[in-house]
Each structure stands twice: as C-alpha cells, then as structure tokens.
Length: 188
Image (tube, rainbow, N blue to C red):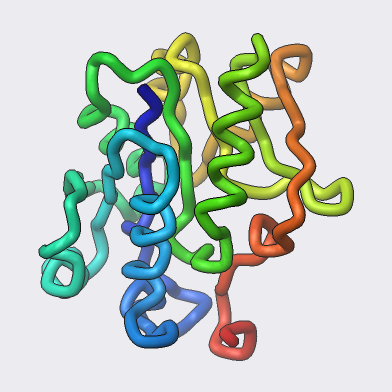
C-alpha cells in the first residue's frame, strides 16, 4: 500500500491569490492535482489544507480523499507533512509527497515512479526530467519518524541529502515534475 499526501495548505503569497482555487481547464488547480493522484496507483489521497481551508473544502468535498487541516501552516511545509503523516493508513509501506501547485504531473508519471519504487530496494524515489530532480517524492515508511521531526519551511531535501545512497532517481518524460506555479505570469 502506498499513501499520498498532497500539500495544499500554503498562502500563495507570491501568487497574490489562492492558487489552489485558480481555474485549471474545467476545474481548479487543486482539483486537477487531486484527480491526477486519484487516477494513479496510490491507495489513498490525503489533502493537507490550511490557508482558507473552508473555501478549498467546498470545491473538493465530493472527492474520495482524507482531509487534514493544518492550523500551523504559517510555520512552514514541515507542519503540513506532519499533519498528513498523522492520517496515513497504518498498512502503508510508503508515502508519496505531492505539491498542490503541480497539476501538470499526470497519473502515468506518478505510476512510473511508483512502479520503479516497488521494483527496487531504495527507500526514496525521485523523478527526474532531463537530469533535473522534481516532485512528487516517495519515502518508504522507514523514514516516517525522521519526516515527523522536520521543522520550519522545509520538505524532505535534507533527508534526501543525508541518505543519498538510498535514493532512486527515476527518469520520466514529464517536464511538469519541475514546474510549480508561484506567480500569475507562470500559469498556463
């Protein structure tokens, strides 16, 4: 079993408005990102919300996801990772950490990452596009305690750096793994 945590609690300060609810095709950015996860081989989707959570919930309420509300979202990404980890199914063997502003990552890309993770003995799997690392990242549950110890506005970068010998890089044909949307000028 592989759980996913979608980090969507941020304030979108650089964007200047709540990017989770920005239009994306016939839906919103957060809906598209959730749908991509739901269409993938993950066993469950946990969505971590914080800033304007009530507004985002109205849009995603009909989707089969677990919701984690992070009251400490202003203290950084680590608090959202922790909030999501607290809801991960006890049977999960790994967790896929995804970002809420990456709707360009399709389910085929996620499935390739998941398949390669399961086919290897490495504890961390990272997609790469033309040699550049991106998201989402899979962590085996053996890293759960260390993820729970994260502080501030950091993800798993230091954990990845400290365990380089346990990292599997998976080449994918999806530039979206390296693209997030931080300003109004970068949206499609």
